[in-house]
Image (cartoon, rainbow, N blue to C red; front, top):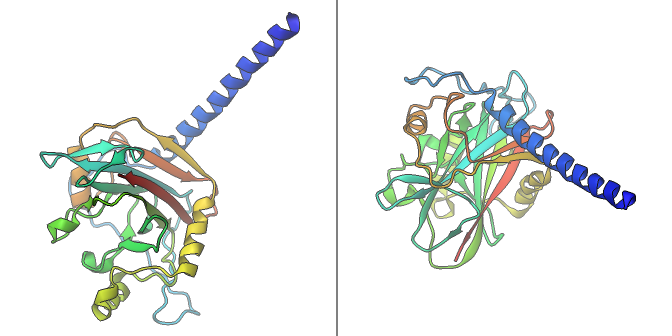
Length: 281
């Protein structure tokens, strides 16, 4: 009997310790991410410097390899998935939700560093299409500022039909890969290079990654990441977040946090890649 009691107590203690570890990891990822937000939101659009571009002395003129972060910090990225409501309001939903034909969604991405953002889309693990940067918006600029939220797709797109992801009637598993990098990624066009590409290859735009390059990028998604998730489904997008998106100003500590936050496990990593899986039937 005594051995059974001791065994029972050991099992209980193990569960408590495991749960405590999960909770600490969760609080750590979210806390680390939010701790670098400013204390309060700025109400006007300040003149914030874009990441400094420093060409590599050995690079060719058309190759971009730049440094953007003066103070190195662990990479982190947060995202929130919004569903377009019947009255055009934007409502937080979980990526684990099953989507249906005609529903429209948008992702709001918040980086924790000044850097470069790329967003790729695949359907049933097919070829990867780059949906951000977009040559039609801000001339393909993909520089991002720490804790400024960015919409993908953008509500600023002049074509209303391209302001949301709209699910069709074909069942599929789609993945949206969020890529935050300290430097511009070699062989992936952005800014004027992307604009020129689309002008000269209209039928091939948006740009698609070749298999070798995509596998190289995708392999970074296997790196261990700390994750924190909020149960905030049904919340309407805040006016503060909308204003921050429009004015390109960082969110403050008291603003609503992203639904999902990923923090890289390594301070030395220059790239964070994470997929967002979306199932529609």
